[in-house]
Amino acid sequence: MQQIYKYNKEDYDDKAINKNGDLFVDFIRECEVGFNKENHPFFANYFFANNSTINLLKKCFDITEPTDFGMDGDFDFDKNIEINKHNKKELVFGIGQGANEDEPLLIVEDNSVWDGVVILKYIPDHNDEELDPIESIGVGSKVKV
Image 1 (cartoon, rainbow, N blue to C red):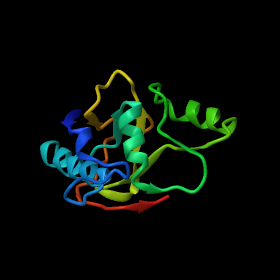
Image 2: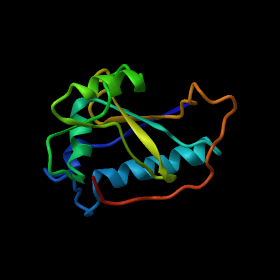
Image 3: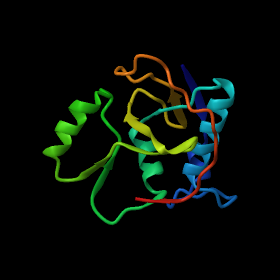
Image 4: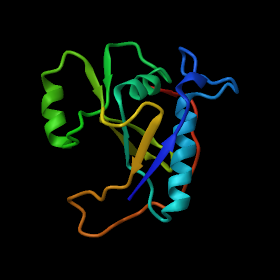
């Protein structure tokens, strides 16, 4: 299950804020709400975007140490954890899910995704024997990492 959302990168300044004063992450939260409405009762648990879009998302967070955002296009979580053990920068695998802050919205860098496009997906956990969707939805704002 996936939804494609478009935005205009030129609408955001160097701090990822648009002319209405909204952070880019607020746009992502709105997309999450839309995803849940379109695919009820499921919520997006993966965020796919290119490097440029992920850098825009990264600007929404108060980061004090060198940090990378998002797993490489191969979104094998265990493989990325192993890679992260040898990385000099901390890797942020995901952000709090707008539908449930206890669930992550996993970030996957996929440079085949065009600028100005984000793709939200619901991918069942391969360890789950049955689907367990979360039905609540919500919208977040600036988050501190």
